[in-house]
Picture 1 (cartoon, rainbow over the protein chains, first blue to last red):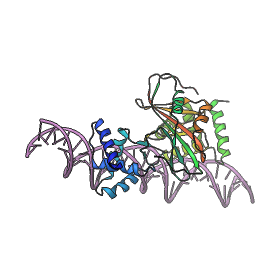
Picture 2 (picture 1 turned 180 degrees about the vertical axis):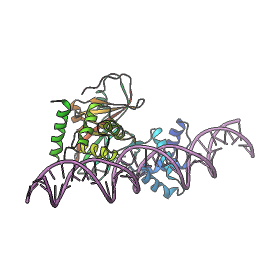
Picture 3 (picture 1 turned 135 degrees about the horizontal axis):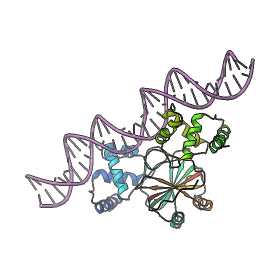
Picture 4 (picture 1 turned 30 degrees about the vertical axis):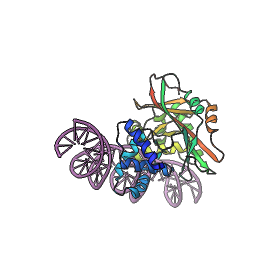
Length: 146
Length: 146
DNA sequence: TTTCTATTTAGAATAATTCTAATTATCATT
DNA sequence: AATGATAATTAGAATTATTCTAAATAGAAA
């Protein structure tokens, strides 16, 4: 079984868990995110998706991305007011935003660090998620892991 | 000397450090941020500022806020795609975004935590800033410190 | 099939922010 | 105090990412 098929089935599973249907549009959008993990914007996803599905609309790309975020298959990241970027990395990680290049790098986080960070919350604060964003410049770039 | 005067002078100092002028608009905008630390949007700042300076324009409010951010007197915070919010708290802190109320709470951070977090960065990543955002619900609300 | 609902689609609408060009204020020199 | 140079403000237009709308299509269930 090919990787794409595998992903499509994992996606179908996650979707049906949420009572949603698997569609070619959702599959192709998810596949595009998995293929090139450079935190693309919706517009960039739209451009890449069109080669496989030339009739897809931008609205659908937005819809699909939102759906994937709802299913916890994809994270949406925002840097200032620039367009939302999408990230299929499900490992605990922070984002490093390189201000020179505009590129975003995933920084793996040891799970105990997230616990330590969450431990600063006073009683009465119940966090569903923690997001960590670094901003600066990356002098070296290391190939990203899967 | 009044607190407002004191703030105005601190502001004037910071501005001139950056080669910028102190203006009534900048003073009033900064004063509004200090007076009510509820992370207002530019529109909310605009509304509050107008009582003291009825002829100010929204563009100027945006300009002033941006200037204050450049001077490191104010932090801009973004939650998803909602309007940018502004925060004059200079202590190291995270933000807790209450998804029910939409309110933002400052969470003080022990400085050593920020060091621990930054320590996860691999060689070659030089972070100028670290931002931590919690999302969830706050069951209790404690009066915020200054 | 037929029906019901989910999804997609194109294009219009929205809204936060930025831009533009003109005016006004302020500073440094004369 | 007047002058000239630059900084800041202003109103309104423009931009742009995103969401909305209403109609068309597809898919599942009966």
